[in-house]
Image (cartoon, rainbow, N blue to C red; front, side):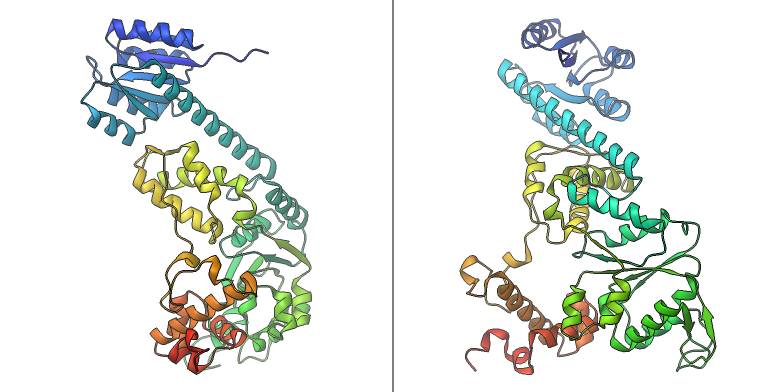
Length: 474
């Protein structure tokens, strides 16, 4: 089956330019239509589909820039290449900012034009493929915010589909920024509890006494400040789903109470004697290795086994790089709509750079990065990207310089990462004057998490006072 020739619409008021373009593009295998004004171009586009519009900037009546705006609004799939006279580079730059795929300066070189058209068509084909893949994901799996069609994500979708319409406890494990909360939402809204509440608790954001009250509720007068009875999250989620994020941060005393509720479905409020029966499906999530926590005594084994009925492990973005183009397109549209900006396109070279980056913050980091790109691009094509630096590559005042392969000792990467973590925590504690709550906020973790890390890393007061690098000299 023969592939139809790419269709190019040429809009230029100069007959000689139109004729030359007709000859050169037809010889190169393009299906060419010629018009002499922007108004005729719009009329032609209303009646037939084209792949590329090649338009002059200055024409009688409607100009090329206004035509570009109309095409971007009504035919966003059509790639627009702007032709401008020598010395009018300012017009070309303005056109790129307004969303043109490319520009070419007259007099036009045939080879340069063919190269631009080929590049425009490649980008258009990539955009169409991304849109089709996105539709396939949504139609097949019905997950509105979960983007990805790579084998690791297909496995996740299958697991969600299998467990959603059940009462099984689910433990979602994955690095920070991989989308654990989105998975919890997908499970809830595909279950028979979808019309009931989905209540979320960040277990690492509250100290022990407040976490108990938040989960289980409290009676009036149970503690200072308890001026009225309070329903906990278990009661609020009755009939629905309770999402316990950062489950690994729960302190031991709260772990015991949580286990009792999970086993019996009965809640006793803090300071109370009466029990309350609840019907709640629990989904827990963690970015920590809970089994390792069990082995080191940081997490109860019986609670681990109770939570780990149906584990779902989310892949890091580095393990699903094929999904990055889909995610980039999704975030570009999302933030363009949020900030009332035109949707930018991403060139093949820029996409290759995005796919080659490590993304230690996973999908969340890519999402924030794309918001910045949308704001900077103003709707034009993104041809190059300045990728965020990895924290390990940044200079460290605590460690005495940037990380390099030379700094990886006999212990390999795990030991090097521990040393880096130890240095960062010591530096944060020094800056905070030893106040752990302040240091935890500076590091973006909970105080209990900081305490755990200090113990695991064996940090001492001398390390904090003099710096980890001073260990060998003391």
